[in-house]
Image (cartoon, rainbow, N blue to C red; front, side, top):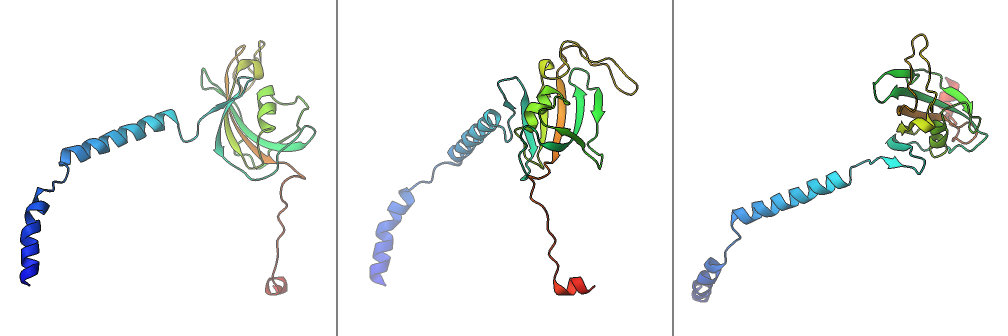
Length: 183
């Protein structure tokens, strides 16, 4: 016991001389870390817009895991189109149970939509910003009942869902147990 007391007496001045960093320094380090994290978050947003060489930009809102369409495939999409400058909605079938069917490469949709669907997978939902040249071009579109006029070269905001790529999506097969079959 005497040896332990001597050891403690000898070490006490050494332990007391050890100083923890002042609280201010720790706070400053935390502030520096928070500042760096905030800067990094500004530089690298969680889901950044991608811009393609054509000028079409997109942000993935939801990722699907279905098939990827190719030219010639008949596919189903849902969409909502908005004139970016005014916010006027010119088309919206997002809530429709039936999608819009078209053949990829047919020219039946806006060139920007055509470009985007080739990069998507069934189940994807993307927010597109379509430059005027890939939307309604120099002519724009005249107003029609329930649809606003789209000015020449207007930039378009487009929510696009690739609903189905028939023949390339995994088919769902329901497996029933013997008990379920008997019911």
